[in-house]
Image (cartoon, rainbow, N blue to C red; front, side, top):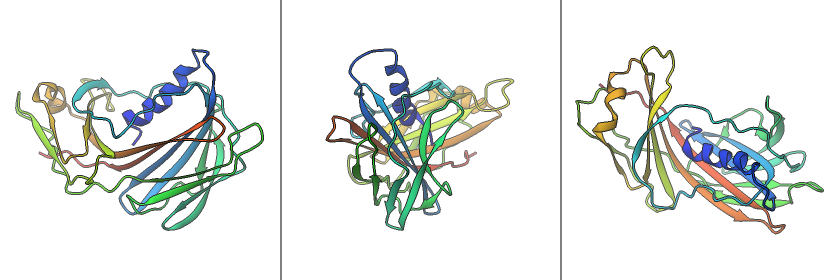
Length: 255
């Protein structure tokens, strides 16, 4: 799921181009896992001012209404990180290769897109680096554990009633939970609004009934739930690595 955390990381880089502080080599590594024991690793390497990336360990909580849009990222100052990046999981090794998107931004992706993965296990990125590019670096971090025992989230909620969402917590303070109740407003043909909730991974969150009225009456509804874990590591040449690991579900709304 490309939720608030992923968008915040990319938006920080895009907005940084409007300023002129010293820039450093920056890697944004992603690992999107889902049921079935698979995940999709990606890597973006750029020069950018140092950023305050999201931190899954910080205390957060609460829900808000928001438009459901893809924030424009713009053109990033891409760095060469080598011909390929090796990705190692408990299921073996695969390689990520550079690929350009329509905006001309380069990301390193595997072929095929998904690789075997045990959620919650450690993974390693072996970045070969390049002259005048990103430095040769080895990065290892834990991924996000699977989401289990998730309670049913109703599609129709009585006026002013709150919804309590429960799940089995990961058991430490390193991860957070994101729940997005996405829906289409009147005359919309696809979801264009959402109730977006960010909670610490303690096994329980509350969605206030006051912000559920549009969700309850919408004809188009979908749910995205993500457990996420972030890690930041400095690299010897003054750069940094930001790693976002998620485990994503798309449960059906209940009655």
